Structures are given as structure tokens and as C-alpha cells.
Length: 293
Image (cartoon, rainbow, N blue to C red; front, side):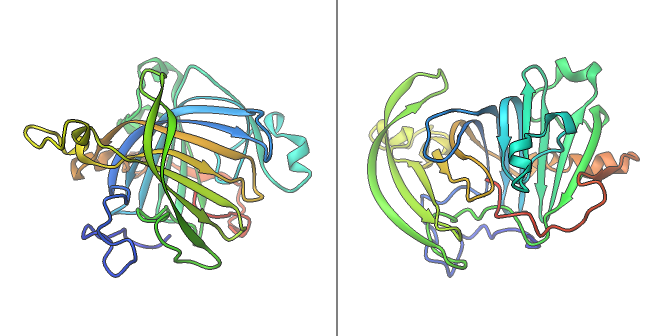
């Protein structure tokens, strides 16, 4: 969590160094996620938005434009008392009913700090993912996650960490929902990672970048069309919440020129804005679990 970021030299001295299947250090993609209680097919939560990573600086941002249902997970925005899931609260965990269908919210995970932003009502209609104007912020709250940082770009490729393991599952054809929400067969390479709770993530990386589909064409091909992008991620609940299935679409690389996406809070505070404690003054981060993907 306190790292200044990951090196741009392909994660040297690690098992996955220079792997073409590592996540790029700076990238963005639209995401869509569905949450289901363990061992069921019942969708209890659905969310859409765009997520941004600058892992060279240990930064992440997510702009959520739609979320509906009950979100039962760690590291989420403040929940009003009337929206708390009482059954989940009895277990000492947080579940919050969401009904966000016509406005945007932002989460920033910067090092060990997580920030939650809402925007002023009179600018909501004009907001789009990637907003960088701090004057549009209405409220900012934060959580100190202590030792919990952002994910590593090679997190699914090696077993560094306590009580973790990784398995390469090989090539699989899966049905992938593209930008048009059309399900198409897609070749992926899959890795399965066991976490500290003996539950499993499955990461499906693009097997055939667009240039490979064009017989490895290199002339006038944007670098984005040569990358093995993250496509589908299965996320276990790990005892903190529900399982999730997340799909990434419309990928793009970011550069240092995009860092203003991540400095929104810094510029908001420079204007005199204050980010209050989302836990109402409790700074104990002992109930926070692993990194939020």
C-alpha cells in the first residue's frame, strides 16, 4: 500500500517478468460486473462504469455510472442507515442497497487511501467517466486502508504472498460480451489464483490481439491492438461478500498526460475541499481485507 508504484521495466526479478500477459501499468477499460451469492446463479448486484489504472504510481480510479441491487463487499462507499442490509450487518459485514441509475460516482484508490466522490446535482447531467474538474465535486469521504494497496500488474501470474498459489489453465474458448453486448466466441488464456482464504480468482486474458487476427500485421497498427488485454475476471467473495463476474471492454492505454484523472482529490483539497472519514472517525483498518480489483 505504501509503495510508490511498479517499475516500467517488466517487473524484474519476478517469475512473470516481461510476460506479454501482465496487465499494462497504465490502462483503462469499461467494466460491467454482476455479483452472486456463493454457489448460486442469482444476480443480486449489477454495476457498470469505467476503471483506470496507473500502477506505476499505485493508483486506481473507478467511475460508476450504474449500480443496482445489494452490494456486499469490503472497500465500498458510505452507506446510509436505511440502505444497510440488516442480515449482512448481523454478521459484522457491510451490505448496502444501491439504486444509482442516472448519475456518476467516483472511487479513487491512491496508495493506502481510498476516496469516494459524489458530484453536485446541477452538473450531474454533464458528467462523463474521466471527469477531471474538482469544482464539480459535492462530497468527498475517505478510508485509510493501512497495508492494503492496489493490485500488482502480474498478480495472477505468480504466487508471491502468504498462503497463495497460481495455476496456468491454458487456452479456453469462452463466450465474451463485446462492446455491442453481443456474445461472441473468444480465445483466452486463463490463470487460476488461490488466495489467503483458499478461494479462487480466474483471470481470462485475450488470446488473440486484433493484429494477430490480421496475420500479425504491424503497419499502422496502434499499440493497443497488439496487447493481450484483461477480458473476464472471476472474483471470489472471500468471506467478506458475494462472488463477482467482471467483464472489461473498450480498452485503452494511458500515459503520464492522463495523471489528472487520479489527482482529482488533491486538486479538490487545494481548493479548500475536505475529505471526511467515511467511517465516522474510526481509523482502525483491521476489518479491511485484500485489495479491491
